[in-house]
Image (cartoon, rainbow, N blue to C red):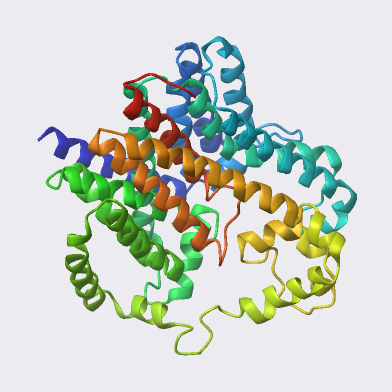
Length: 464
């Protein structure tokens, strides 16, 4: 009964939030919400528990693409709410420096490398601010560029760092896990309520995708990444507690929002995630049952979803023109220019290419392939180093997972490895290997996995 009451309260709060967001046009109301937000953070700050502040930060991050978090609170460079949040979390981190955990050398290398690549990539962009103004859609000055665009990726990477520095035991890990799931649940409910009450022409795929993108602040292909990277968490919970309403309802809601997002990549990734998890966790017997469930769902889904899934296949262009009109022009140009191939061109490098300038490719701001985008910006040498570091992190998680003696902890870590692998698969059409808004979940779950591995293996003794 308590769970049911909590669910009803959650639905009412989310419904009110969706309506409020839709009508959030009055300056006074916006300032009130921002003041409430920072008031809560200040309370957590003085509460002297970094994990509490981090949990609340994680709760807010799904909405980081909305106007509320991207409006300027202060009339200075870097005065956006999302950047100020980063400074606040950095302050919390520095004032609790004595509570830091000792980090594994490979983890330190990974963190330092991410910071290095982001800083170098953005600093190289200073000499191309005119072109980057076109790329970002606004006039850029050096100070504004550094304080806004260089710091923004770190706002999404910082949870990974803080989890590793401050999470010390199973209780704190459960708190992070709880807030991660709660944040995504509220996010999914918000999108679904907005779809029900504010999207007019629900029969038009383009209209629905556009309206939802405006509401969230990013393209529907991007915000679905947040959902696809957490669906598997709820699926694991269902396997261990199949009768819990608190798990069943959010799981169904996440699947429903992914469906109405009309992202073909998201459809594929959810199927692939569940398939790989069952395979790696030794649950092959469930695969035939899963196959019939997918067939059943396919028969029930609306016609618009079926049309979206078949789009491209019927037109013999499943890549949506990416191969011939984006990838091949960039690959040909970079293969013929060793300097670009090895070193890249800095942030937004695609707008500096001859392929872009001469209209030899589609008018896009990125390569729609995270590996190719990284090469265009940073070069193939740094790509090889980064992939090796990703492999090292996955290996650390996998080694500890095999030695774990707690069933749920082991399943969580397997699911996280699967999520990371599937993220790389989805990266063939979009995304980034570096921190961005849609992939903040990746950094959160990687941090949780590294801590979870040690707790499961060493009985609450943290090694890194």
